[in-house]
Length: 386
Image (spheres, rainbow, N blue to C red):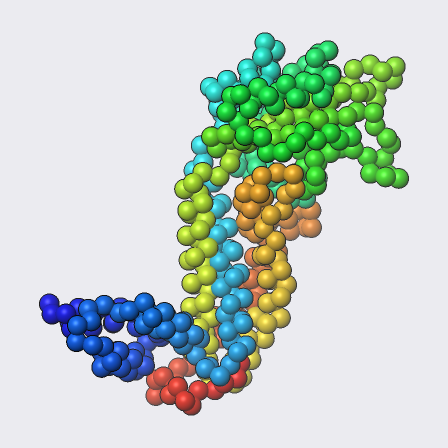
């Protein structure tokens, strides 16, 4: 194969970024005519120009700016849903937490010489007495949003644990010595943390002018190591009559998985696939309906009506506070596909329903409209409106 033949083959691959039609051959001839005899591959400048103009040409309507905005919003929404879908799929293959704490001796590091109870012992400390039943995501206690599934381990109150600040500081120091990285300073709050991640600390502390005051104080911090996130809590004080030990004033810790590297790769691939797919699908609909004003209005109106609320619905990804940011990211992605029972959506996700409401009418119109018999509309004669 000669150098000119190799260059032509590479140019042909490059111009596929343009939509099918005579424009491709015109561009190929122009590139070959302008290339010097010794060139064997496209230059970086040529690649950049062809990709930039080809991506725009996929949308048709060269004088319209609104189609570019609509395609960008469609790509953003599709990218978020693509990332969410691949993330949820990937979490199904994440290693189970069962036995990890005992195998790594985490319970002995946190509570040396103490009787630690957890779901492996058959005690219903968390959502199920069977550790294997813990899903990747679970509802917050108030059913407002989700969080990572976790396993919880507790010890009975002792004189040492009731000195909550001293004991918590000791646990932190032992974890650091064992290779854990601390995520933040020790925090102290009112009440016992109910593990709700939608508010800072997720405490069961009373709200002003709503619930009674509490004398219970709890210290907490979180740490991470080797794909695990550990959150420690130690409470003291009592609301019991006569100052008896409060049953909830215990020392405990939870362990959850953090996202493995391959899950990041899957999520990124899903986002990229969604972005490209959203742009190309919008372009296909736009070119197919070009020159047909009524059909264009029928397709575009629902998309524009849903555009802003749909973009707002997919953008807030980090829906947790006081937690690792990557956990908030994956929980936010999961929320794009999960049901919202607190708002009455027990089966379908309202953001997903809104996305179908924006895209399905346009797809239906584009699929049923009759194509022009003369093929592609000449570039200079295209309808600029959208």
